[in-house]
Image 1: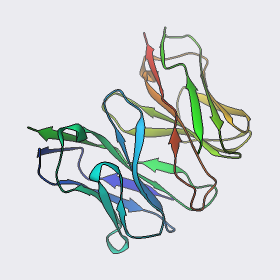
Image 2 (image 1 turned 120 degrees about the vertical axis):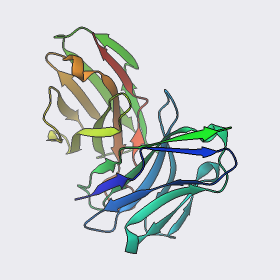
Image 3 (image 1 turned 60 degrees about the horizontal axis):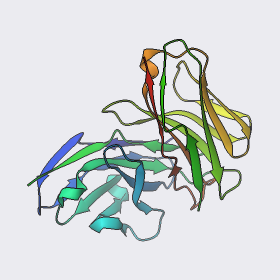
Amino acid sequence: AQSVTQLDSHVSVSEGTPVLLRCNYSSSYSPSLFWYVQHPNKGLQLLLKYTSAATLVKGINGFEAEFKKSETSFHLTKPSAHMSDAAEYFCVVSGRSSASKIIFGSGTRLSIRP
Amino acid sequence: SQTIHQWPATLVQPVGSPLSLECTVEGTSNPNLYWYRQAAGRGLQLLFYSVGIGQISSEVPQNLSASRPQDRQFILSSKKLLLSDSGFYLCACSGQGGMNTEAFFGQGTRLTVV
């Protein structure tokens, strides 16, 4: 079975400063991991995904995440926050078998201060 | 890539009325299908999960049911809506395991029960 924990329900940073959104996962097998973003009243957009290739994954809009098996973590980072990054971010885990479910974390709301 | 059609986009229904939300998938065959609900200010909760026609797993006890009459059709239903059924409902699909577990989402249905 898989599960995912987003450690912060709300993160607030100043524009131009680094962003760190934390995610820990639990999986019986090698997982696939994803980050999705949801802007207010919009649908879900895939930021990036890890599927056992390089452990450092680069996504859209300058975001990246590093898969650390020893720490069971998949934290999302960005060097410099932009006002347009304000949104809800979801960490997602899935297994590799045909019956694997896609499980969402509870979400982290990112606020950007001017 | 897969495309998901989900309708309607918004719906206002009185308490006690029936519900039927439909989701169809294009661009893939034999997908895993999912219904999620997002209550106000909350994360995405997995409601139902299907790996094939007629195969439905219910994740949480509730007032809703799901059916999969065709390979690429997934229906969410209720015989009598409750106020607590209000929320944002998302249909999703993914490939059957392996490297193809990325989820694709419909645009969602915002349901308000009054």
